[in-house]
Amino acid sequence: MIRGTIDKIAGPLVVADGMKDARMYDLVYVSDYKLIGEIIELKGSKASIQVYEETGGLKPGDPVIATGEPLSVELGPGLVTAIYDGIQRPLDEIRKEAGDWITRGISIRGLDHKKEWDFKPAAAVGLEVSGGEVLGEVPETKLITHKIMVPPEVSGEITWMIEAGKYNIDTVIAKLKTPDGLTVELPMYHNWPVRKPRPIAEKMAPVEPLITGQRVIDAFFPLGKGGTACVPGPFGSGKTVIQHQLAKWADAEMVVYVGCGERGNEMTDVLQEFPELEDPKSGEPLIFRTVLVANTSNMPVAAREASVYTGITIGEYFRDMGYSVALMADSTSRWAEAMREMSGRLEEMPGEEGYPAYLGTRIAEFYERAGNVKCIGGDRNGALTVVGAVSPAGGDLSDPVVQATLRVVKVFWSLQAKLAYARHFPAIGWLDSYSLYTDNLKDYYNEVLGGDWVPMIKEAISLLQQEANLLEIARLVGAESLSPEDQLILFTARSLREDFLHQNAFHEVDTYTSIVKQKLMMEVIMHTNAEMKKAIRNGVSPGDLFDLPLKEEIARMSYIPEKDLDAIEEINKHVNSQINDLIEKEQTA
Image 1 (cartoon, rainbow, N blue to C red):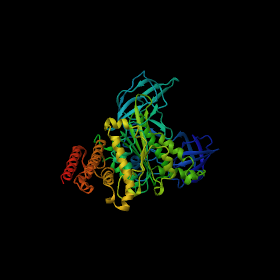
Image 2: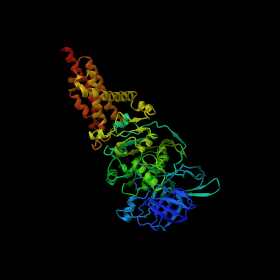
Image 3: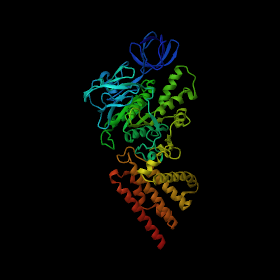
Image 4: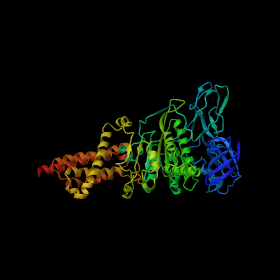
């Protein structure tokens, strides 16, 4: 170990002298409190350390000890259902030991080393194995079977394998003889540096959508499994609610939710809701497939950066098991603010709006760790999808964090204050948002929803774009002065906005809509549009059409439970009969 002394203290930045042999990103313990920190700059014998805990009370001359190891997380059974702070300290264990407040210098390991797990071997003596190959399985929860894998950088021949039974994670389950002739003992867990991406065999294009149950996302701006998305928006536009909705209902086998600099009450909502909510597929509590990383706004600012790396490393670990993982980072703006603060204290040359010049590189490195991949060590595919919320000041999309994020992500969900103020949620603007995965997902949609889904969505978006152009004219001359065809465009676009895109996150039925129900709802709206167009050509006045009772039936579609989807198909029959009655009436008049 390398020992130095504190030379200077500037908030969360501590400069230590006598650290000549230390390395970048080494984990260090600062002062007699043993505060956890990380070396972020080296100049001669001096090391600049970002400390992940409150530095009040430190003084020059206090000891600093470098461990020689990078900041790492423990990966093994016990991760699922856990609630961690930004450096993988379990908050429930901290509360047992220190009460309601995190005591400085408290050190608790990320995994429970005493709990015993049912281990079932999946490999045999004499087998040549390499990093990523599965040695055995542990049923961690009812939803997640934990695969115990060979650490990525280890390979060799299995010379000994433990029998099935109950063991804690420190128990050696296998011994390998490496190509160098050394014997390596493998327990049920291993450590991995958070800043180092876990290796993969191959990265592939996403070909399957991440179904979220949110209609505006799944229908108009889909996100592929293994893709990246950005959710920027001003205060109060619903970023956190959308992140919560994705974490609850996304079609992922594993969810990692990172509250990076979030307000404490919002993280409290997450922590209270997840154990109570049911997974729509299995009926089990959602917490059985969730890991939560909570770094609230009143926690030390330096730990915000660590929290996103901790979260994505855990996500990569479950991806390597072959799972589809969704990671929600809320919000990356506060991570960027932490970078800006540390950069300022390091006296680095500032970039745009005071952010460090390497802001874009750090953001790109983070999102590049997402992907639909072939895993190393076996015939497994896994996917890690990353959705980052961005909170630009005043909703300004020219903010450097937003622009740096948009350069690397392929889905942009533009949250708009005017929609939020009009109580339209999710407040995702349908004219500004986009998804670059639509073409990749065509084959999936054609197979699951039929060949008419993609053209139908294109027609719906076209109607909303035409509505935007017609509204200006309607405001000047009145909607009644428009042609019957243009009045119908306004009517259908309003139905799309209010009956399809608007969704109540707090209604037990409307909070989640399956992709099958979404298609049925869209078919009703577009079928109504086609039938009304036919009626107008037969001389029926728009006023008579727009006053039909079917309007109320369409408005209530979103509240029809998933088990009663036949009721939505019945609406099409009512549309036909009501409109045909008007056409007959017009022709006999």
